[in-house]
Length: 133
Image (tube, rainbow, N blue to C red; front, top):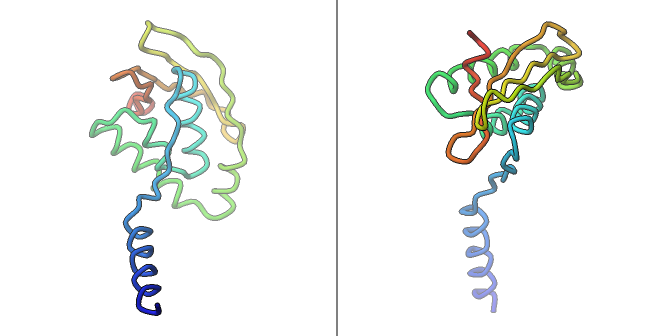
């Protein structure tokens, strides 16, 4: 009996360690959702979630890594200011049925910024490199 319990414990530990605890993010229903969820994740320091809503190309990934580095370089108070700031969406403009431009600012930084969001392979994703140009 003791041997059977040990085997069960080992099997359970193996199953737990092999399972993927990855978070399942909900896909954005439209460009506004993709942009809002991306910005919320970035300001909160959840760059895994931000990457989920990112249009995957080399430049976008590099720009997101740079944004993550800048966030991590902030002291504790600076990160808290970022996390507690509000996203102020000024406008959302449909360029066509698969491209949206969002103009926004943060309550902690009122300088207006633009974000380009595209529908690619039936997923709304942020083309982040356009915010750096």
